[in-house]
Every structure is written in C-alpha cells, then in structure tokens.
Length: 229
Image (cartoon, rainbow, N blue to C red):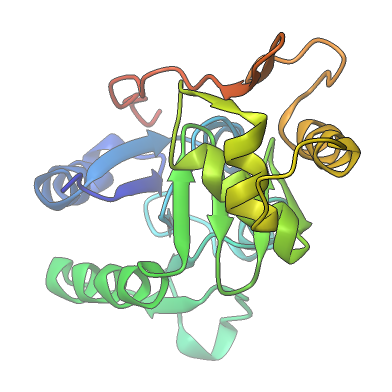
C-alpha cells in the first residue's frame, strides 16, 4: 500500500527539519515554502492532507489557511498555530496550538486519513470523492451526476486501457445495445470538459477511432521535495 501523500507548508529549515524528518518516515511528503506554492503543487498532484506549519513561518497563518480552504476545499487541513488559543481564528479541520508534539500531529493526520480513506478514488492528478459525488480536477471541484461518476470511475479503474463502446454501455447504462451511443458521446464530452484544460485537444481522455476511448495517465513521478526557505 502506498504511503499517503502529505503536503507540509513551512518556511524555517531550522524549525521545520525535525518535523519534515518525522513525517517522511510515515508518509510520502511534499514540502512548500508558501501557501501559493502549496496550492500549485496540490492542484498538479492530489494530496491527502495539508499541514500548515505557521509556527515555523512565524505568523498566525489564518490568511494562508483561508486561501488554502478557498483553492482546495476538499483537502483536509491541519493548522499548526503559534497561539495563544484566544487569538485562533482558523477554519482548518484541526488546529494544534504550540507546542505541538510529533505524536499528536501524526495522530491528527491519521484521524483525517481514516475519515477520507474509503471516500476517495485517486487516478493520476484526479480525485473522486465517492460519498460527496465530486470530482477534483485542475484544482476545481465539480459535482457529478450518478452516470458521470460511474463513467469516470470506469476509466479510473482501467487507466491506459482502451474501453470499447459496448463495455462502457454495459458498465454505465447496463445495456449492450450500441445502435445509438449519443448518450455516451455526450457524457464523454462532459467528462472531457471536467478533466481537460483544452477539451478539443485532450491530454488524458482520447478517442480510439472505431473502437472507443482510453484514459491515458502518466506514471506518478517521484515525490517533489522543495526545501523551505
């Protein structure tokens, strides 16, 4: 089982090095030195939990937290706050006020992973939340109809595999009739508009002429480690 991808936002190497080292033992860790960089990284490659280490950044971090919430509404967020408690105005899922132990942080991450583990289907840069029936693609969250979700899940379960029209009709519409596939074609167009930056020149969901469609997902790259400045 792959380790969960965790995004840590922090700035001071002297303060965040022990935290980075400890989290790397449990998770696939990505680090960023600012909220804006973190948003770009999370939009490019899905993460399971974001940890905002405002303590190392020597700021309350409430504004950064709000920016993360607006840009990545479906990603659980832990806010390490310098305190005191009376000044906390964070909208994170979990707020831990200084001092924060590694054990307590890992426990908080695990609680969020457990809450989300059965809900998410990840494929390359895309994430479906089955319970909420939403798709996260290109940093945007889209509500799905039941048929849209089933169609996308079929592609996610068969990446880089050509699926013929009959197979798609059977799995999504429970019929092997392919005399009229306009419904399928319309749904494919909708899915492309969700997944692709330019639907007319798709990067991921390709048409295989005379056969069907294929979702091409590039193999996940090695974790990107960006040292905090």
